[in-house]
Length: 315
Image 1 (cartoon, rainbow, N blue to C red):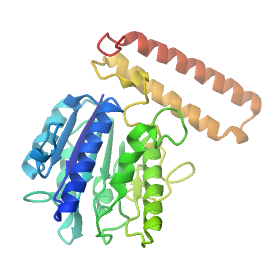
Image 2: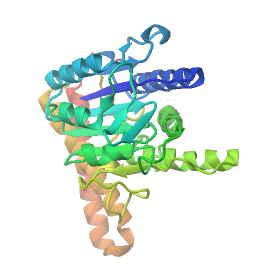
Image 3: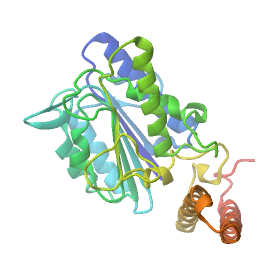
């Protein structure tokens, strides 16, 4: 199962209040409608809940954030994945990195401690705020992908990275390898590139440079991917599903189904890795291994489809 928490902090100027609200609402909707997250596993916290107009939301105060994180600690199981998206203005002064929210700020240390109580398989944190890079050092660890809009706490101006990350999830725009799914790595690469293009198109010097860390060393990189220090884990985690895929299930998923989903993801990743090494492999051995994995993937996919309940698999 997958859970998502979207938090939009203080906007300050009215244009940012409206922008942050639109992004937060956009992430909620795209994860629900296009990526199969059910409403009971989506949590939306914003500066002004009354302005959301549709999705259920609460005010993004520290008290409410802690309450939702405590609820997630109760709900999330070791086989589940958790996505946390932070939007707004941040700071990284001598008192530590933080997201500006109504009332006391949300610090990186507070978020770290709360996430430590949640037994997720993978935890993906996207901090799209200004001065967000120091969150990597605070949150990095095994089974975690940390994405930030900036490369340092000194990049203090408002960001556009969240807008392009949101675009990556719409209509599978970020599906760079065209396999019908958007991985966390693909979403990062898409948003990073589109952010750079936006500054170029505006004739502006870029004031944000996104980073990704997924190897637990506390240091993000601008260029994650094959052969790099980061990107392996992010490449095998997907934002919910691709259209109609068996992992799209929004109803009950049995432990057996979760195990099959995990096996399917492992096989897909192994197939992708083998394809990337095709030129280095013996042709006969490559063909044999590829055939074995594709047959196994088809078998696992069939078993998972057979497990789907009527609620999961509408006619």
